[in-house]
Amino acid sequence: MGGTAKMNAMRSGLVVVGALAFGYLTLQLGFKPFLERAQLEQQRQEEVLAQARTEDSFVDSFHTDTIYLILIYLTMLILFEVFFSSD
Image (cartoon, rainbow, N blue to C red):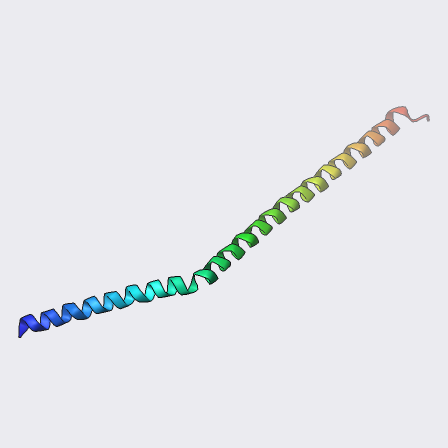
């Protein structure tokens, strides 16, 4: 009787493992198109965000450079006025 119970338990375990494997493969095959589309959409969004970050850094550096140029220009005007003014 002990051998039969052990054999039944092993069969039940094997059936459970088989059912889990079959369920896993069914989910993978059934949802594969949806998963691929979701991954492609996520990659596209990451590319858009990376491009936006690059454009923002360009705009920020452009504004910073412009501010520096304006400050240099104003400084030169002030120095010119101080040194070359006719009093």
